[in-house]
Amino acid sequence: MKPLLIGELASDQPSFEPSKNKLIVEDFRELRSTAEKLGLFKPNKLYFFLLLLHILILDAAGWFVLWHFGISLKTFSIATVLLTLAQSQAGWLQHDFGHLSVFKNPKWNRILQEFVMCHLKGLSANWWTLHHAQHHAKPNCFPKDPDLTFHPMLFSLGKPLSLELGMQKKKYMPYNHQHKYFFITMPPIVKPLFQIYSLYFIFKRKLWREMAWSMAYFVRFFIAFVPIMGLKGAMGYILLLNILKSVLFTWISQMNHIPMHIDYDRNLDWFSTQSLFPPSPLL
Image 1 (cartoon, rainbow, N blue to C red):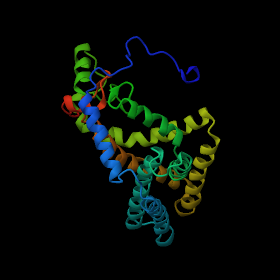
Image 2 (image 1 turned 90 degrees about the vertical axis):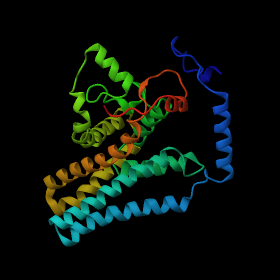
Image 3 (image 1 turned 180 degrees about the horizontal axis):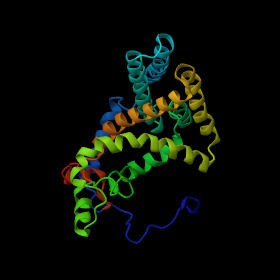
């Protein structure tokens, strides 16, 4: 097994989960068996095809409204809603491809994920897969879950971590008001930062196919919108769309994670951490 040996675990990282309950394991195995018998793990490929098709239609419709009717408050608003919805839906679709949930052959999942993530959104599929795998490996375990990187510089997350900051007398932000400034800080900056770091990740890892897909996204966008609103207008518009889809992404994804229990890695199985500890509000 030497070719598979990556390294040894640190002394404080045991190779077992002391809280693992035999009954819980058996219940989950029974649940999985039942779900398989009901066919719940068999993806409906027509559904995913229609999902991709409606994203492409929304994307094209957003451009068509501005191109055909010109720029006005009404057409600009309609186009922005259509394009934001297309970007948001593309994010969830690539999520399913990234989890290899659609095709039995992982290769086809990867190809479609790259098309949706890189060409329709201008982001790196490999970067997302790496970080999302880390998230699923240790969900809500600081600092192993990359979704918690905003703690403690912007937000204080989880009761145990918040108490630790209080005992250490550390305060980087007015945490007692974070439930107010969350809406004007995190949503607008998440996607623009992702966009920049994603391109850096592509260059650093020399992912030339992803680079081609991502560049095609920007070329397509500017070819479509520069004739309508000029170069500066198109640059401002792509930034606006990034901010708006960031708001949707953050509200949908993070508000499902942040209220849950957040702590250091206690080497507990995920189900136990979520059932033994009550949800933590955004303090």
